[in-house]
Image 1 (cartoon, rainbow, N blue to C red):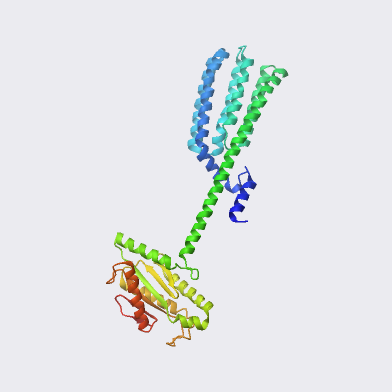
Image 2: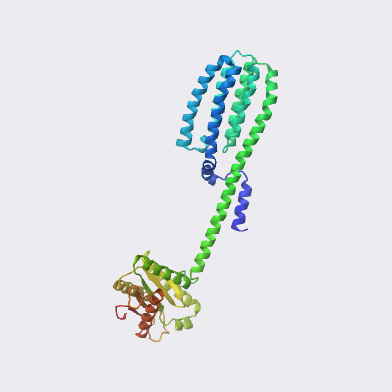
Length: 399
């Protein structure tokens, strides 16, 4: 099973359960996607609760002023809590449970008004208490356990106060329960469905993000493979051609020149013929690693141009500095002390020759001119005996 298929299977197995390592991401998701809804539902519930002052004035007129004062006081407290939770804390559980908790307090306060009223409409008015459970259950988006606990608390408050209002008579309580229970169960089912939908949407979003990350990683690997020499791990010729043009264009924009080193392993064909291709490949890797490690971070970019030839693009503008670096690289390769007993000059160790030039050299008018200039200098180094550096300003040097 591939990585993509195993990831999908993992999400199918978890279902609506959020894995522990995704809890923090899930909380951020709920706040980002449903924070505005949770804020809005708090204000909607508060407005609905305040509008009930008119119903109180009509059905329990003896408690009208107390109702007005109570609702104003609870609304002010609610506004403060909304500010603290949604603009200060930003805790997703508090944001999700704030309105249900306010509902619990409002239920208690409302029944206190009913118990103090002498209105004959109180037994009928108590049926309006189903609004509390509906608002509480339909507003949650994060914690079903939390809303279940709040629903139990609201239901207990309603049924207990109803029992008190009817002096412990069971029949009114039973009749109310017959009407109340379906509303409770239905609203809880809707709440569970809503919360499950949020969780599934989050898991689906995570799965899509995982697929996007996998695709991006795959594209990155393909891009690296397309621009990397498989044997040595440095850039390939295609990558060099693109980089050379990019450097040239940057130089035209900012006026900052750059440099190029073209190096070749001396007498590599007889080395390959006598020691074998596997040893030859290993030699190429050693040389590439040696040169790459000798360059300071960000100093240059190395590419395998083909066969035993390598090129290095450098952010160096001074010809003397370039020559010094080229000499150091030549010495580093020589210090590897790779045996080469089949070279015609009997030096018996592996060496390199280098052609070095900056874009400031005479006759360099475009990117390919720079490469051609380095190629001529490399040819000159070989003609002069190899194991040398030939640069645009200095004569060939050898050790």
